[in-house]
Length: 237
Image (tube, rainbow, N blue to C red; front, side, top):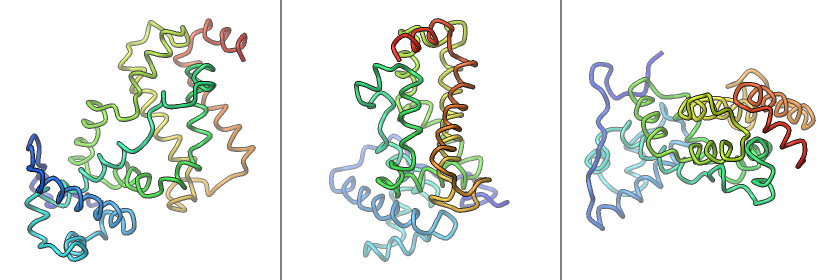
């Protein structure tokens, strides 16, 4: 299956470590705003840089001057999209009081609600996760690891400080497990909300969804949780 790189022989061009001037930054921001809506509506493959340029009333070459390629433009759109999402520890105080796994439950239970509130960035995140080639996916993974936009590292430290997570597992491994599993499970919960047929199921009853979330968290608890953490949650719950 063809990827989204501009050329199969040449990796995509990305503009990095360039400090744009104020007017240039404002133009970049307008381009990203327009491109985000365009990619969300049309998907990556059907999106056309020329159409984005026409919408903005600028030359197509101007977009390439700022972003290097269609891939580079999408990468900037993806970064802006995921930066709009809340971090794990932005959960309400009462939820944080319930502990590490209660925070995960809170965000999983609200997945579909958040989708309806932020349809465009969620659509962009799905495109980045499932419609990119290996070159661009590597850039996305590097960004997620270095910037940690969801605050997974802080969440894991929170869980360790409360004694809910095992101390014999490398912290980076726990962070990776949370990132991998939460991303895939949240995507599965969206099912028919964005792209019917993209995942195996096509929607389910609320009680079945709650049961799946409970089963998912039980698996995580067995893998990375501590017996002390389970006892603490039972005493405070």
